[in-house]
Image (cartoon, rainbow, N blue to C red; front, side, top):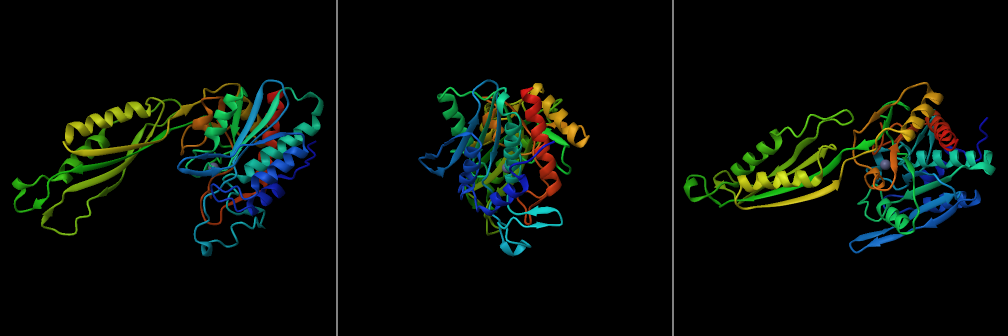
Length: 384
Ligand SMILES: [Zn+2]
């Protein structure tokens, strides 16, 4: 019988009440640290700052000395609430209505953080004497932002201090519609390209005296867009390039403009790296346009954690609680898993993501309680 000491719903509410719009932790990490320290965790606050980035506070907490180290990772920063009049209630009130908890971060992902903290403390209080390894938490306040001074730097700090995480579960909302549907064991990579083509401006009636950059741009985009990058594979859907904007800003009808630009994004699977894709894009552009500028930002590489002990434990734990068999997936946007995969085995499982980043973000109270039990089951199976 689980006898919860930290109620995950109350903790979710308290975390939602902290207005931790990225990257401000707004007291959320303080609250977590206080709870963890009371329960015997050793906490290290890790504020990092870069030259051109704002300071971000992070927390690494650990209990136990032995191997293996099972880490729960997550973020307490949230995206801004947007237009307040679109919310039925204050987005930071943590109101419960009809068995649903409302507020920014309810789904993504304060309630999951509350659930894994609650489950861990419960486990430790039941099995105090024989924690067969180490339980740890890596909690950042910079997942929704540029992600420069968050998880990435904490991992570098851990590495420098010879602290090894063996298996990591990220509590991001992985279920599209129903709790227990989906575990993520990888993510596609993402890169964003911006192309500017330069021609020679002139009167449309005298094209021989001009060079139209739009023609070049269209030809180039056609090649990029039509190329089949791959067929996908067992765990990944096919890679895909989407053109996101084409801009010329030509206000008149009788002029060939001087330049034309476009942006695109590629979501790519593990058959590519950003490097191989950039090489291909450069080759295409060099062939099609004499004078151009290409700027590419790599948002993250793809990653894939081979299904193994960790995912098996997760599947079994979900099945025990909900009687459903989750699928192992790699779809969706990027997450901090892109950094963690270089240091540890990693898989993601959290709440239902339907309302994340939306007005009136909310999550079922029953789901928070079920997720807490699932995390408890995972910890128990992991250490036994
Ligand atoms: Zn998130």
